[in-house]
Image 1 (spheres, rainbow, N blue to C red):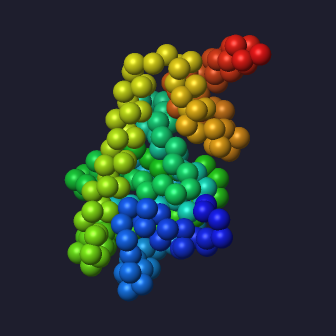
Image 2: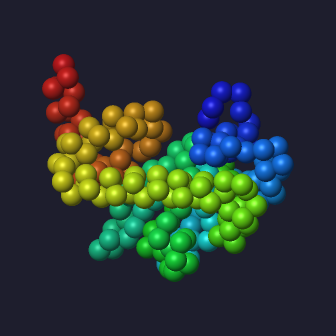
Length: 199
């Protein structure tokens, strides 16, 4: 979280990373977003249901997962400052193939699909925010899928460490293993190999 920001100020600050906001528009944002708290392992959105909210992570980490061949696979983590949801389900209002779970205590601000349309219409640059935020989410998803199928588990772990180093101590190792597509035992071997290479 940015220094000296409370949760709502953090939300406003991150929206301002995309578009300018007047004082009147900040009040509109406050009226449209709802602050929500979740406990560890609590589900924000369940696979098979329609994703009806866009989430902003004010505190904590969210884990995105899918059931594949009866096994739950982690494929995305989203931490403080991220706007996120199941994009395909949200945009098309169709059943989701993903679940979103709180890794620990989490505070989010949510906005429904319907209120997001009000956001777009009420703010001078509301449409621009939507386009830029969705583009960012789309690029992250595509990059993850591309690297997942083109890189080795070792390379995927190295990439995770490079881009998510602050999260390493906050995410259980078995979820990181699932994220890079290996067993926890294989992740231990990868970490030992990396340690030896760096020593």
